Amino acid sequence: MTKPQLSTPLVADTGPRIYLACLAAYNSGRLHGTWVEPDKGEDHIWDALRAMLAKSPVLGAEEWAIHAYEGFEGAGVSESASFGSVCALAGFITEHGELGAKVLEHFGNDLEDAEAEFQAYAGCYSSAAEFAEQLHENIGTEIPISLQHYIDWQSLARDMELNGDIIIFEMGFETVHIFWSRW
Image 1 (cartoon, helix red, strand yellow):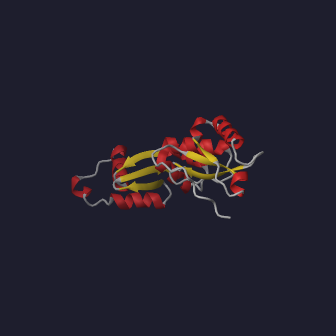
Image 2 (cartoon, helix red, strand yellow):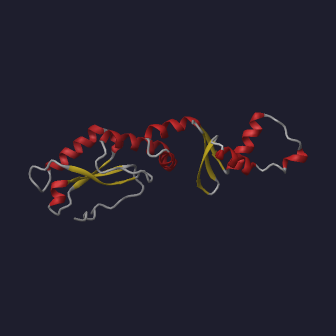
Image 3 (cartoon, one colour):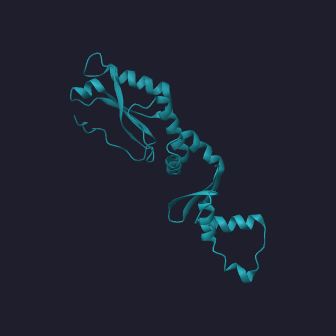
């Protein structure tokens, strides 16, 4: 059986939210559910779920699933995810946005590792080369003017990434986020 299309339009400018569907209605060919914002907490989700099931077109409906989600910046939510994990993920995405989703993906969707990685955030730069050059300037070693144009900062940054010293996330034109590697 194919899932029916949601009649509620997906709105791109809202924060993370999930669509809780009544499985009794779904199995009888009807769409019945509600959108819920996980940033309001687990109790709010449970209250919304109980209210939605109480209004189900199928009497005695008890089973539910997460049939849709939005605002998670590409991070996935399974249809049977615990409300605690959905709330934690929503909080992480609300705090870190698209970058958070990319870091989460990099760490195999391990939220604990992704959160810990933000402790090693080195900043946002126009390029990895800019990061490498600023890092060198912060160290304080002076390079003679006659040699400055011979240094390939992009290659240095690439080597740092290949050696496992940094992790680079390119987010768009002249938007590069750098993290120190924790491993």
